[in-house]
Image (cartoon, rainbow, N blue to C red):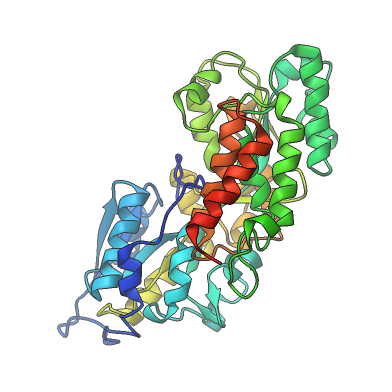
Length: 425
C-alpha cells in the first residue's frame, strides 16, 4: 500500500463498535466455498493504494470461475470504520480485508473472529517481525503486504554549507550510532548554519518510541503507568535536551508543508512511503538525498496486512487469494505499480526492488537502501488496546513545548494528570 499521511501515531480511541465485537464470539460464517454453480465471487476491501488492480485481473484469468470485486475505501479511516462496523454486526465484511498495522491494537484481542492463516506453504515468507505482529497465541491472522523501514532524508546542499559530508555513504557513517549521535551532529549543523536540524520533536518521537518493544503496555498487556514509564520518559527528556535544534513543526500541518520550500530544516525520518509527500512538498527544491541509516538501529513506520474474517462465505477461496496476493512475485508487481515496499524476504532481494533509484533524491538507490533498512529492524512495538490513547497524551505533551513554547517540565506534569484521567490503572 502506498501511504500518504495515514500512519502517524494519532489517537484512535476504542470505539463502541469494538466493545460490541467482544460479544460476537467466534466464527459466524460458513466455511463453504463457491456459489454452488461453479462460480465464486470474492470481495477484497482495501484503502489508499495496494497496487492490486492488475493482479485481480491476472488472478481471475488464472482461476476460471472466480470473480473479484474490489471495495476500495476513500481513506484508511473509512476502511477501519467499515471493518469495525462489520465485525460488530457479524456480517457485511469483505472476504479479504486490508488491515493497517496500527489497527492490530484493537483487532488482536478479537482474533477469534478472523481465520487462522498459518500454513506450511507460507512459513518464512515474511520478515520475522512482520509475522510476529499479526500472530496471537500461535494464530496468524494477517498476511503481510508492505512495510515502512526507516532511513534519514537530508539536504545535501545544506550539509555542505555546514561543512558536513554530503555523500550519502559518508552521511550514513556520520549518523551511525544512537540518537545522541544524530542529535549531536545536528547541534554541529545548527551552530554552523542557524537552520533547524530536524522538522519536529513529535515526528522524531514517533520514530524513537517505535523502537520500544512495550512502549505503553507491558508483556502482560497491562498499561504501564506513565509516571513509572522510564523508557518513554527517557525519550521525552532526550528530545527536551535537544529542543533547540528542532524546527518545532507538527507533521502534516500547513507550516510543516511550507517549510520544505524555505530551508525549514535539514533532516527528517523517512520511510519509503514518505518519499512521495516529501518530494511533493519540496517540488523544485534541489539537494534532498537519502542515507541508509537510522539512529538506534532499525525502525518501522507503517505497513499493512490482508486478513480473512470468519464471517465470510468463501473462506478457503479467500485464504487462497490472500496468500497469492502476498506472495513475493505479486508483491514485486505491487511495488512496481504503486511503490508499496514489500515485506517478503524473497521480494526484498529481487532485482526489480533493489535496482530502484529515485531521481528526486539525487538518484539514490532507494530500493537497495530500504531493503537493507528492512533487515535492520528487530523490534515491532506491541500496540495494545490502550496504545493510541496513551501515545496521544505523550504526543500532546511534546507538541506543547516543541510547537507552542510551553515549559517541558510543566507539560510532562500535565501529561501525568491526563494519563490519570484515562483511568487505566
